[in-house]
Amino acid sequence: MHIGLFFGSFNPVHVGHMVLANYMASFTDLEQVWFVVSPHNPLKEKSTLLNQNQRLHMVNLAIGDNDLLKSSNIEFGLPQPSYTIHTLAHLKEKYPQHRFSLIMGEDNLESFTKWKNYEEILKNHKIYVYPRPNTNSVVPIAIGIKNHPSIVMTEAPLMDISSTMIRQAIKAKKNVSFFVPQAVWQYLDEMSFYKK
Image 1: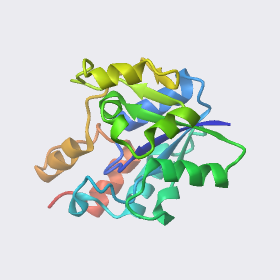
Image 2: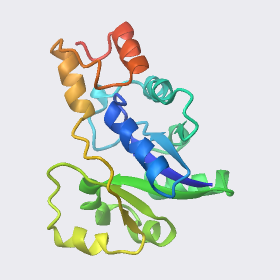
Image 3: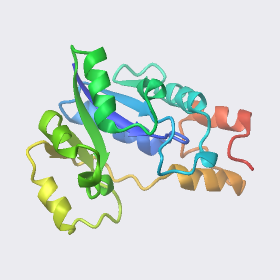
Image 4: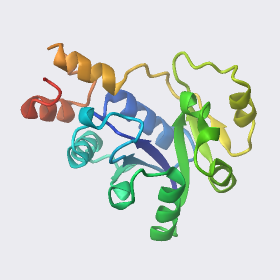
């Protein structure tokens, strides 16, 4: 099976993530999309992150019974910080029957050449890129990368929703019930997450 890996903190998972994952699984040649929940991105302040199992639980609530989407906690057991190249090697070993590709925002593509062993990733995996608002597409490196045969530029809907905005809105006591899947909203509200 051709699997698209959608990496993220999902802190919390929101409708933008769900729309993109569903688009990739329905409008490209990817057969399934796995949400790979990151335990802790070294570039992000850990204090703002909910526990990894709570974030994984919210992803599962968001997916519900959709067979095209799946959650993965593969990085929970890998050494920190987790590098994509290591996660890919681990997945290949664990699921030799699947073919894995990455799903990435256009903004991340611009810094992709700074990733550990990025050439090896490009050699062995496709990268499905979705458009991001305010992406500076004139960065010469990004233009070079965009033309790489492993890069698949998609016409996924432009999603301008962020987990940061949702966390800040909850803290400011604003209603964000339409920004996250209903089951996730109920869980967030019940647990009083991000309110302080």
